[in-house]
Image 1 (cartoon, each protein chain N blue to C red):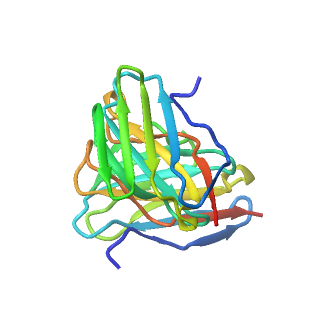
Image 2: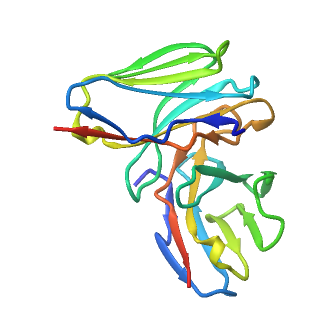
Length: 112
Length: 114
């Protein structure tokens, strides 16, 4: 079993819809949770960075962490075609201090 | 450009040759991380370095791979005697300090082995 599970998609939504992404994990020592966006042939771009459980909002993006369920989510409101990319969840903590454990990434397509 | 700089962007090598990948961290960042992304797979941690020190190399293959981050100059990931299975995208990330600080990535080096 992988430490971090993420549905690879693709996830197709119409422009303006809410995109809902999630990851589950098995290591209860993880404390830091990140979401990255990766366009084709580019490096991952940090979108959200959260510590422990709770919600964090930044513009159209909301990240949620539920440590009791080992489940994290990213919501993108008012999605745009430019949001079409692969979204990667990543986490660290415990023995993984300093090294990120990534999900496989979810490909998102926002259609005009 | 204040971001993480990697070069070359593309590198082609024949089997048995050496590959050297370079990474200059963001200004003010003293911690560097290397990750590998194989086709259809996620990013996998390889090594974590601070200036002149290897902090964690638990993701590095035991043979042919080495990494350094000297006092002056970029971090180098070196692959000796490359094989076809080394073909991948290699990403470097940096952070201002270690452990819990967010990591920022470069655009990677795409290594192709003929």
